[in-house]
Length: 197
Image 1 (cartoon, rainbow, N blue to C red):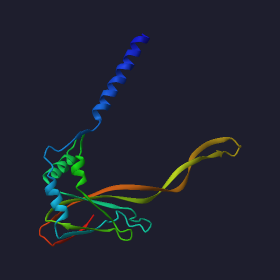
Image 2: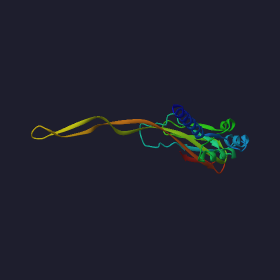
Image 3: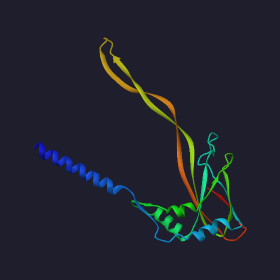
Image 4: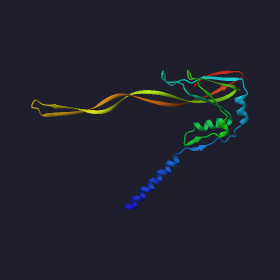
């Protein structure tokens, strides 16, 4: 009987391991050929500008824009396929080739107001993304003990007993990380686009 139970446990553990392995995301790359000439031209030889600001998710004077980096990718056919793969449901993990990933531009958002700027861009579509980290606070309560109330009759005999929890209020401080993204289109040379992330 013990050996049957052991075999059942081992089979159950193996089945759990197989299910877990299937739940892991499978890396998928775009099938389109990455056009480095097109990506390079979009990023280096234009006269257009994208000006933007990173907006806070919640108004809080204690939140700062310190260290926020905005990333810009040119929307080539390769990138568009990667973006579509990202949006698909399921267990796929959209990946980009190292070469395609290198054709990006980084801008540091101003620590004071979250403003950023990308220059020398040509007409076309661009994908912008950043991660906004913010400190938040919630008021909560927790049980720290109990209080028991006992009732007696006129003869001094206990007739009732009631126990209730004692709660203490406290503040919970934590950080959030939100991925913010947007596709922006430049339609003419020399254009300045204003965006809000």
